[in-house]
Image 1 (spheres, helix red, strand yellow):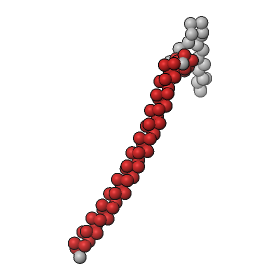
Image 2: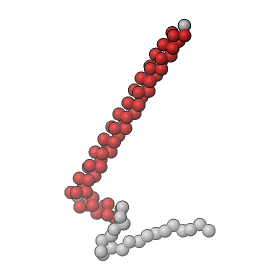
Image 3: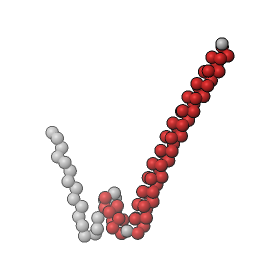
Image 4: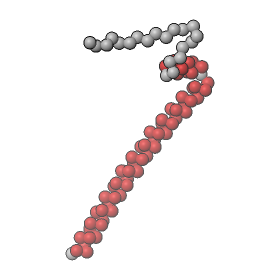
Length: 82
C-alpha cells in the first residue's frame, strides 16, 4: 500500500509539473510576442527619425525642449497654494 501511495504521489506531482511548465511556456511565449511588437515599433520610429525632418523636429521640441533661433520659449508655472 505504501508503494502505491508513493507511485500515486509521483504521478500527481509530475502531472502538476507539466501544468506548471505549460503555464510558464505560455507566459514566455506571450512575453516574446509583446517584445517583438515593441521592437517593431522601435524600428519604425528609428526609420522615421532617419528619414523625416518633421519627426526629428518634433522630438527635439517635445523631448529636448529645443527651439528655433527666432523663437522664445515661455514656461507657465502653476500658482503655488498658500
